[in-house]
Image (cartoon, rainbow, N blue to C red):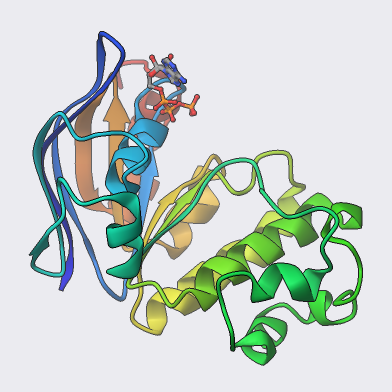
Length: 229
Ligand SMILES: Nc1ncnc2c1ncn2[C@@H]1O[C@H](COP(=O)(O)OP(=O)(O)OP(=O)(O)O)[C@@H](O)[C@H]1O
């Protein structure tokens, strides 16, 4: 069971920004997606969750064709997307934020993030960036996804906070969720990922074990800087 993508093409206006990409995200694993700025990672994730239309190619979620399905249908089928930007409802408390879209599971959220329990009545707008990201992640987890797409959740966060948050995604995968993770802390992400994908200029240029990419620093450098290894 997995999310499967075949020959996916995505455009922004006139420009084709994802060009014939094929891969799968198995349930129970973390798949790390790397690539330099503008490689098309965010556009790909947005096309998977239905924010951007799929121009060509096929998307399947656990055997179900989803290429033309609306965002809501994909979400109901178990596709959840943590977008860049840590969107919380700033005037609502932590608890109220978590209850948006999830009737139960508060205790589970607080078990994953005890930091939030202490602040359950605090308006989310008063939390630190790391705590806000915990709220966003917990909300996504409480939606009980089969596949979770996570786009650069560490933007603007201290490395220590990122080290606290990323293992939660690994734990989620161990519980059976497929995680597709776009992350600028590449080494940290690769160290807990199973499979790695590298995009460059809209194309998939590497697909293989995360551990192999960790052992090939030239390839990792290329992934980030767009330089030939
Ligand atoms: N809102 C937008 N409108 C038009 N073009 C966009 C928009 N967002 C991104 N692009 C362009 O689409 C291409 C792919 O960008 P995308 O953000 O998907 O890449 P990325 O790999 O996620 O990069 P980054 O790491 O900088 O977020 C780039 O050429 C970018 O300039």
